[in-house]
Structure formats: C-alpha cells, structure tokens
Length: 278
Image 1: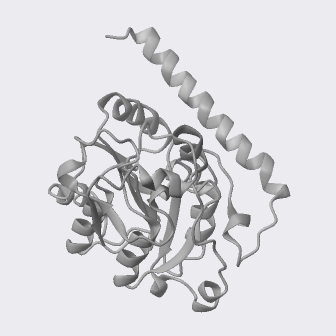
Image 2 (image 1 turned 90 degrees about the vertical axis):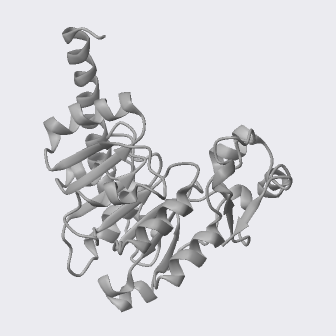
C-alpha cells in the first residue's frame, strides 16, 4: 500500500494537471474563432484527448433547457476524459463510471476536492447492469452522455435506451477501421476472446443508424477521428442545428499509426471475424 506521503504527492500531481488543463483552455480562448456551423472551430482540449472539451462545452451552452448534469462511462481517472471539463471547470453534477479500480480511486480522491457533486462508480458496465449506472442520475435525460468502453459500446447504449435513457448530447467513440459506410459492431461473446486489437466498438454508420432510429441528429466527428457527436433535436434551436456542417467520417490518427495503413487495410484484418450488422 502507498504511504500517506505518496498519496499526497499523487493528489498534488493531479491538482497540478488540472491547473495546467485550465490554464491551457484559458490561454487559447482569445485566439479561438467560433463558427456556429463548424464544429471544428469549437474544439479545445483542457482534459479531453483531443478537441472534445470544446465541442461539448459549445453544444451544452446551446441546450434550451439544461439541467447541468452528465454521465460518462469509461471515465478513467476522472481527469483524462470527456466530462472533466464539465465537472471541474463548470461544476456540474454528474456520474463517472469506470471498471479500473485504481483509476476510480484516483478519480474519487481528485473530485472530492474539486467537485463533490460528482459520483464516481467502480463498475465494468455491460448490457446487463446499466440500471446500476442510471440509478444515481437526477433524471434519465442528462445534458451530456459520454461512452467509451472499447468493446460492447453498442450493446450498452442499446440497453440504456431501452431503460428510457434520453440524454441531450451523446459523445460516443467509433472505430474508423470499419470505414464510413458499414453499419456494424462486434459480437459481444467475442469481445474478450478475439486476439485482434482492431476488433472493438462500433462503426460510424452503425452509430448513425442507432441514434437516428431514436430521433437524434448527427453533429459530426472531431478532428482526430475518435469520437462522434449526436444531439436530441428537441433540446436545441432548430435554426442552429440546421446550420451545423459537421464532418461525417475521419480516420483515427493514433490507430493508423499503431496498426498501420488506412481503414481499408485495417478492415481486411477484421474480415475473418464475426461482425454484427446494425
């Protein structure tokens, strides 16, 4: 076990990381030129891996009747994720969930200091236990929902919507190796047994099919090709949504470097594995 001194040192390091994130966001604010129709112009990163903080911040400020709440599944250590900006900079109420015990411990220690309104749960979420995730929420319609579990994402989202879940903004990771047009995901029974690291998650067309079947509007993807954004139209001004010109597909930059090749080359590695059509 770590000593009390080591724990204090870790907490200090996390606080320093948070201050750096807030400072970075403040430093770039004067040079950002926001275009209401261009999601690329909304991007900035304080805690998110890429520009998700900015897109979430901009979209959430356009909600017509916000309740200032969020849910993130796959929240890591509470700082390096998609909702830390809402929790730390904007002091929203929320729930962060992750299956990694040490990461959850770090998240609790950090957020107890910065925002006690955030509940941190240790849970490996699947389609069978989503009711545990929904229980702490103030409503089934939080302003922001972020999902990134690198495996059975589609089945988790499907189960949550079957439980009456209706967030205003949805941020979901997509797997660009499936390309822009295939509506597919993995077989959940193979999620942990497949040795191919590209066999995970959902295609962008699969997510579009799912969310559009629930009445959501597609906003676009961020510039690194990892996350896609969807909104519930009844929570936004229609003129604003009609003017958004988001990009429909981008390849995952980091994945291309790790796996090599473009999405078509990556997809060839998946053709021997079972893909489920959405």
